[in-house]
Amino acid sequence: MDQPPHIPRPRLVLSVGIVGHRANKLLGSDWSPIESTLRRIYGLIDDGLADVARCGAAAFYSQEPPLVRLISGLAVGADTLGFRAAPGRWQREAILPMPRGEYARD
Image 1 (cartoon, one colour):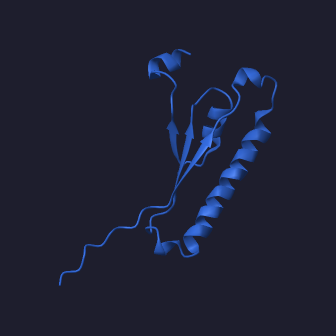
Image 2: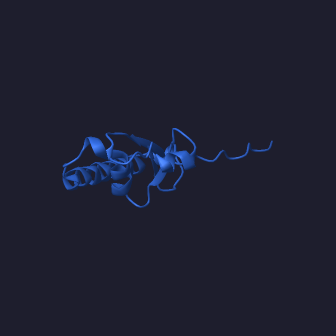
Image 3: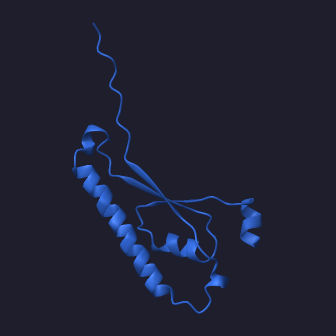
């Protein structure tokens, strides 16, 4: 009797959303501590995913490194700060509330 084909294991993927105030609502704010805090939080997310990968996740997920998707509306302010602070290996995705050209003009 033939063996059934191997079903590949999925990659471990985590989607993280970020949303916040636009820059005009945060006038006079010092962005440095916010960006530093975001970098620390992102590091904790990476550490947590690495722990999951080491603790038996191989039974459920592929051997590929975990993928983190950062999703945002990309408004100027907290959203763009969150994108800027994200690790370079993270995938960034923007959900725009209007067509790209109109959004760029806004």
